[in-house]
Amino acid sequence: MYQYLLTGAALGICSVTDLRRRTVDKRVIAAYALLAVAGHLASGTEQPVQAAAGLLPGAFCLLLSWATRQGLGYGDSALILACGVSLGFWPCVQLAFWAFLLAGLFSLACFVLRRVDRKKEIPFVPFLLLGLVLLAAGG
Image (tube, rainbow, N blue to C red; front, top):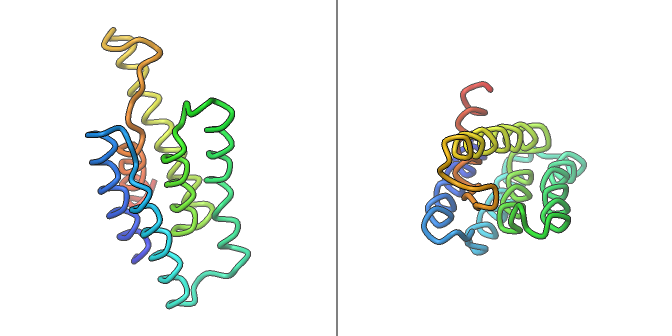
């Protein structure tokens, strides 16, 4: 439960900065990752192999950021990496799935309604926050 609350707080803070300034604060990501590791160490709930597996979705997103020349920003990918540290592999995969699905549907709706062209960038972190809400609700 601690990890979901911590993740919600980090995603909430980063959502505000992403919406306002189109950037993700690296200090928030670092603090979030350190608190997640500290929480796992204090509770003894995470095995080293499980913790390492939690890094895989974020590592994939970092590779995607590099391959697309930041079509998905490095800050967004680093945040997903920290989510993997906090939540573990499968919850992080589910979180990323919901975020990409919701962002894609939002982008499609904006494109169909002619609000944006296909080159328009949208903030991604609010969709991570919505994905966490869906994940916590049992999605």
